[in-house]
Every structure is written in C-alpha cells, then in structure tokens.
Amino acid sequence: MDIMEPMGLPAKLLGTGEQELLHLRSHGKTMIGPTLWLLVVSALAGAVFAMLPTSWRPGSGWAATLLAVAVAIPVYLVPLLRWRTTTYTLTNHRLITRSGIIHKVGHDVPVARITNVAYERSLTDRMFGCGSLVFTTSAEAPVVLHDIPKVEEVGVAISNLLFGVRA
Image (cartoon, rainbow, N blue to C red; front, side, top):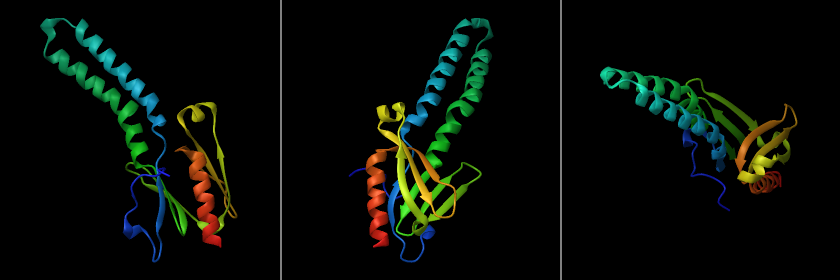
C-alpha cells in the first residue's frame, strides 16, 4: 500500500526504541483554491500591464509585477508553505502532528490513549480520494487530521497498527 511519503521525521525527534510507521501530509486538493487565486492575480496583473501606456514603462511594469507578487504571497505562497509544513506522523509510541511556518506547533498523542479511529468523507473528499481521520482518545478531545489521501486505507492501516501495538 503506497499511502505515505518517504520517512520525514528527523531521527533526533524519536525516542529510544521508537519507529516511524506512517508519515502523512494533507491531500494536494487543499492547494486548488490558492492556485486558482494565483491564476486570477496573474491574469489581472497581465491585463493591468497591457492597459498601461507604453510611455510609462518600464516603471509601470515593475510596479504591476511588485503588486502582483505582494498579492500572490498571502493568497498562494502562505497556503503552500502551510501545506508543506503540516505533517502527521504515526510511530509505534505516538501520533505526532506538526505545523507552522514561523510559529511551530506540535501535538503528540500517546498511541496507548487512542481508543477509536474513524474517518469522515464529504462528497468533495470522495471525488479527490481523501477524507478526515478522527482519533478518539481517552483523555482529550478528538484529534482530527483533515484531507488525508486514501483515508480509508490509512484508517485501516492505523487500526491494524494500533491493534498490533496493544497485542
């Protein structure tokens, strides 16, 4: 089953005897909206550039380009970096979530505290082959991992891993 990316968590973040079993990232569908916005920004910048008088060039071209880049950073680059820096890792001891570009946020849930693994799939999720994994724990609110590719396969694999860990 090819549901994970290459091992991604640095070995220094693993405890003694801890092994990385799954390393996941959200489905690429999360970048569809930002990519469409980037295309709109690019088209508008091109239209503005085309409408500006040639006597104003090259200054107007640079201004249009800088404005387009200034708009593209929050509408495309920031979501891309958020997507790339958000990972979910399952080891034989814990479920690890990491996210953040500058301000890093992490959450570790011991595997022994996970009491149930469920998944949710909307119509859009089913079209893209992804969904949300919901981990119920004995002590905390449920942990939800959104837009996981092949969510059913991952859910079954995690359930099997958890069953094996507890056996």
